Image (cartoon, rainbow, N blue to C red; front, side, top):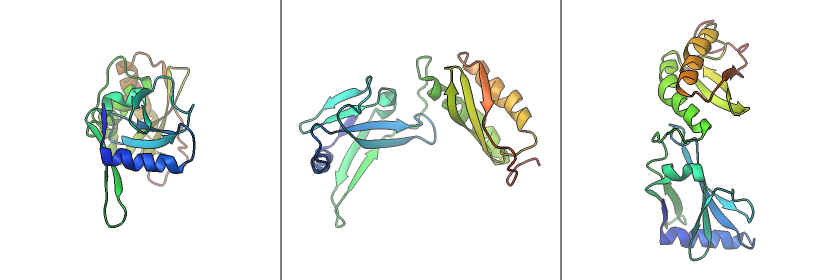
Length: 193
């Protein structure tokens, strides 16, 4: 799943000890996994802050909790620490964090983001636009936000209905509706005014 080198374990153990919290551990997760925006994160995790479905890695001096939905994206990931003249640097390399690993069992958010970043946004980028997932209501309504050339664009309704909504509803049958949360009164960068 994820490798934490001995220098990294030593460094993290020292950091955790300085927190002066009994049973404090580390949690690893990926924001926006499987998309070009994927970001691998490592944070302190106080007792009780781990999630019910997190995977526990018991190391010699502390525990590491790994977010369940991030597990497939953390294959071959390495956390390392290298000393240097400025003290040192902790690095996290997760070569699979941005690779699409989507299946029918993937969380709805991941499946929506996969379609947005890999199929819809490349077309919108031609007009300087993009769309992101803002929220999911009632487990079936995706709330989107347009940006760049799409915000305030006079053709955004057509883009939403004939492009984005049609594509998402066809590819993700669990979705029942798409909503736009964008303030289109701001027209500064709009592609069509």
